[in-house]
Length: 184
Image 1 (spheres, helix red, strand yellow):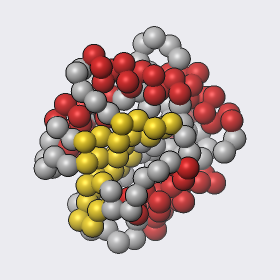
Image 2 (cartoon, rainbow, N blue to C red):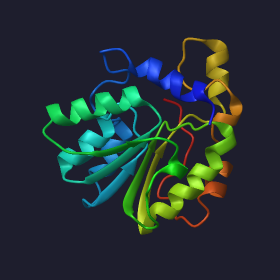
Image 3 (cartoon, one colour):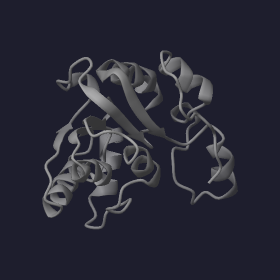
Image 4 (cartoon, helix red, strand yellow):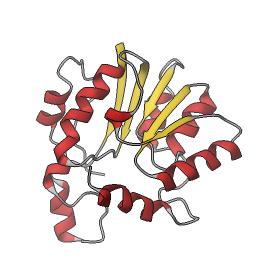
């Protein structure tokens, strides 16, 4: 994968301040609070979602491409007195197994377009039968907001954004408890 992808996230996470705060994503929190504790695999960043899951008793195995995100996630885990397994690298190079996880968290995990579908299909294999994917991301309509206000965050290339059809295609064997495009 091109170096600029990891460099961009390292730059974002290098600051002492947490880019997205230390509290879990609201949607992930709502969903985790409904589930029985088990093993979870979040695409992570600075660790806020992984640490929250660990505090609930989940066995957390996280990944990201950012070394700086990894450092901050481990610091956050230590300050919250929890342990998380956090690996840095390309998903396909990490040592995860089929049907290893009860839940997978993909919170604004916008992978480069060239690997997006492959990553989703790989993650699908890591999920146990009957498992849950907690997914929140920007839709392709997000570019309309970026056009109106360039300070709006999120990916700026349409190929990294999602449509409902793409999600259904990447995760074909699922009963979707909730799958909707919402404006927040």
